[in-house]
Image 1 (cartoon, rainbow, N blue to C red):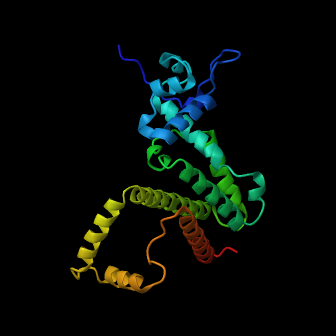
Image 2: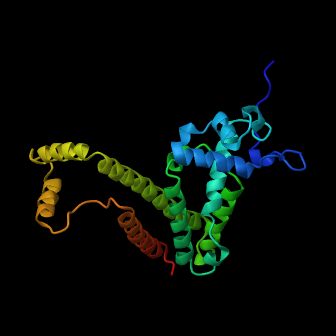
Length: 247
């Protein structure tokens, strides 16, 4: 006979009843994060987490029901790191949102796999806390609720998109450093494409770069990408302030 699926979030389930349970949810999440940071999200399995903790695989099922619970714990652990000190929220809305944006990007960059691997995670307590902090940041703007949501979403979208682009750029830079031959082949192919005449904008930039003391091109270092993030964030907040008429 089929049994009804338990749809309750892990946060709605009681912790193990032992007076001193051998493992906590935080320990399980920490083990899963270490595995994902070292070997990627796909390496996170019940067996691997159990080995990381020094436990039998079946022992984990005393604490979590399935992989979805693990993913929820992982996301909530990441969002715990995203939270900013309360003092960051006591200034103006721009300073508060900037602090949240910087902290969020730093955490996402530290766990680059999380940008595409936690989309199905259950919303947890630290997710609520993070949203509460974002709402506190914009509480003094005088905007209505829909506009406050729009302001928060615009910054969130910028941060996640920028982090995703930065991770891709740094991954490409590391691959290029590790394999110069691949770079030479890519450059040769690219120059051949420019010589076709089909890409006048790129051809003009390439010609300018060839004459410049510093190469012209997208940032490919962590420092340069962070500087680009800061300039973009300032421009975004300037535009939102003007559009929404907030000081």
